[in-house]
Image 1: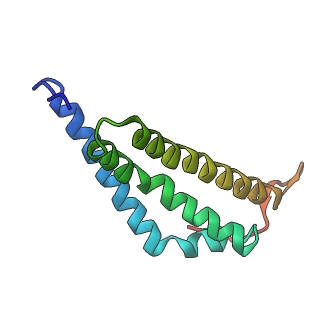
Image 2 (image 1 turned 60 degrees about the horizontal axis):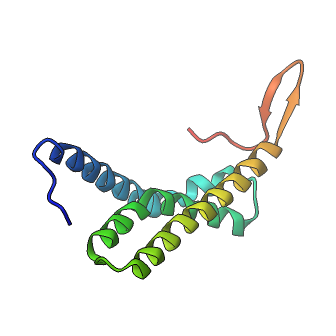
Length: 124
């Protein structure tokens, strides 16, 4: 692995800081986030739980992804495993979140006189 130059090092440090903050947000959401997702009440319990886990995965997978890149070595087969394992699962997580979002939108009604109304309780 090449050593970064002094001019590039701050950029790698900022990326490391972002990854650490993202992991912290993922852990916090893992501990405290499910009631917020469940309160939306627009989908089945299975889809709601999948959306909750998808949020945690999208926020937190980058730390493990980056760490595996650093430690896997120069072989291409492990690299492909890392790339498929993380990129495909992020795509699946995004699909789950899109379905959850569409179900949330389907719970809304549009009225010309009143504008948008949400059938579920708002989370503040």
